[in-house]
Amino acid sequence: MNYKVAILFLSILTFTSCSPKIFQDNFDGDTLNMDHWSYEEGNGCPDLCGWGNNELQTYNRDYVKVEDGNLVITAVKKGDQYFSGKINTKDKVEFQYGSIEVRAKLATGKGFWPALWMLGADVKEVGWPTSGEIDIMEYVGKEPGIVFTSLHTPASHGNTINTKKSKIEGIEEGFHIFKADWSKDDIKFYVDGNLLYTFIPKQYDDQHYPFKKPFYFLINLAVGGNLGGAEVNDSVLPQKLFVDYIKVTKL
Image (tube, rainbow, N blue to C red):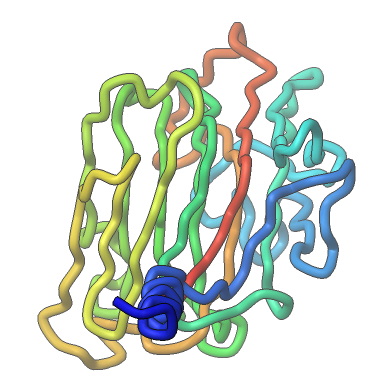
């Protein structure tokens, strides 16, 4: 192989092996990047008390920090009130299709419910579940060792029927990589490179696959609620959800 051919081959190999980046936040520095994120605060009242799930926490930006290269969301209890944090990228980072990767360490314990998820950017206009929802990862402390990956669609009337509960050894220990590959045809969910669930709709209309439009990210740590459960183990407080990075590349 001559020199020019070798250079051309190397260039093609480099181009094809690198997926163009859509978005990335490594949570460097000591403050949240407000070009990417916004805080959600309160208890959802009066429009959506308990955030629609009878959750116990009040969200407050004071419980969202960037420390040592991580996003850190902390759940605490003061008196008889729980506090935690929630952020989203609405109107700031919205995209359609891609490979989404999040490296995170979970908050654990009965009653704690960390989530990495997405909503259709048109949720304020069309409402939920018409907007669609992609749950990249939900962990429910009352079911140790289990990761939930789910989709909500108008056809399911918001019920969690498009879902997979996966038992993962050691999921409570250290950091893990949660990934979703989202295309016009299907959505695949992974943990640490292992495929857990592939969602393929019965039909590709807006009722069964409302995922053909831009979505945005949400990261939060809920307490209690319909999924988290009424019982909360206060003895393990404070609990922290750590996110090392979040990135999106083209498929």
